[in-house]
Length: 194
Image (cartoon, rainbow, N blue to C red; front, top):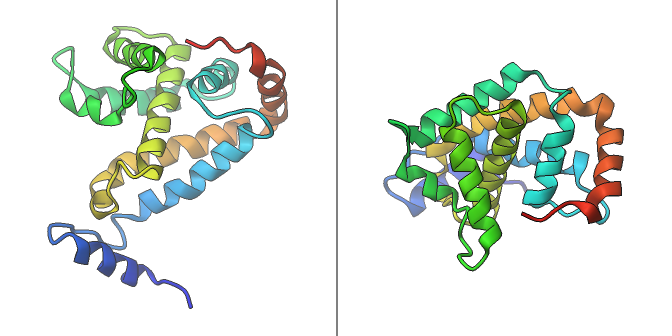
């Protein structure tokens, strides 16, 4: 016996009367789980842990393979979401970079993301880092229960943008994946923790 989408939608809507989940408006969130699996499986393996530092390394080593317009498109989308009048909007806190307050590295990452979003002309590499970090926060918040499944329909547009970028990213790096993975593995122990 398998679960149908209609049964899933009925379940989500029955748990939250204000939920307006439909088959169409949760598709992007469902697709994200598969696309993220492909992304993670492409670059993180063996003893290479997925974390902020390895995402930094991946960003640094992949900028020459992906078209800048793809990076700019998603970066501008997030900048419009998280910045207003040259200030970080309150919705940014929902990314939960500092969910563990006792970790100074989380505060540094949050500040780096904020500074890059606020910068007039951030570098291509800085934008790439920020995108991977924000996407990683969406992944963590979804997979670890911060994003309620009862309200996933509200994130259709965001996950649609993320999915498009991740597919372009993984596709652009397919021919270079082996080299990037080798560099990541070879340098994993030397990656500086921020």
